[in-house]
Image (cartoon, rainbow, N blue to C red; front, side, top):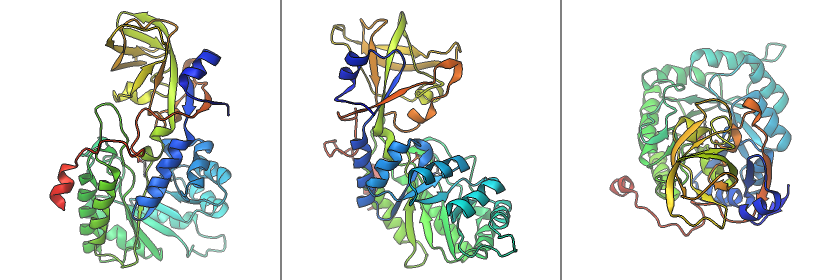
Length: 400
Ligand SMILES: *Cc1c(COP(=O)(O)O)cnc(C)c1O
């Protein structure tokens, strides 16, 4: 992969005709080391946030040894990129064939479930041809928790309700020597309190089921920094999680896990786009709803951005974007602040697209290709550089 100092240098050298993804391995390395050193337990990387093999190797080299995978394609991908990594199959709805291949061919022992049917499916798919049931399964029951403190909900699709959790935990305990509880508070949780309400639910489930719990997995949801979304320091999240974990009625040697996706890779990538047409306050750019800007179009997510031309003089004004495809839905309302004299042919860098950005590109309408380059400058924002003003986390203080 070619390396450039920054986006401006790259644009001057290449004048790219298509959108380009710029990767910052040093930023992902810093995020990985932060989680490995500071999270009071084990950090699994949630591969769906960005499955790039280059990124996987950066995380591995910086101490992330466990990977949360959700499909057989992700299992194969990570196994190939990182032959020694531990893979955990954390999608609560899997096909029997995917479970079988993961278990027998790729050494996957850890699976999640949220129904009795999925438990039976996992047991059947991991039973040997001579009828011997697997004795080394590590199973986690996914609990439904509230997403009310997060920007993107993950509350409606997966997870057993607290009221139904006890019989499922008891039945799962019968099938494995290593039992866990997991949940996901929703992505971009803007307060550590998100994990408190979830861990309260874990506590109630464990108390009612009366089973030994070997691991509590607090899932993903750890935030990154975006315009108008400046979360409290991650240390506050880790603190609160640790204290509430210690207060659970579980084995003294029980493990604590987390599964960050966004927080590990948001800073890894930015995107360079070109304005192809201007119509008043609307800019037609060459990435959008079917590309790395999926979230900008579909959930009005706002990303930091900067014009890469040196000859723009006007003050900033608000623009909306159209993406490159012929679909009216390929629209991003923003607002995106750029110099008022920006025009067709000008390049823009859009930051913080390493998570759920670079991974979202499709080939719809022929606009999927994106060259990738390495750049050496800092991401537009960072939770890990140590120079951020620390916003106070109100409800953490009140919990202390
Ligand atoms: C998506 C996902 C994650 C990662 O979530 P982030 O909000 O990106 O940290 C972790 N665990 C599971 C089960 C997921 O589906």
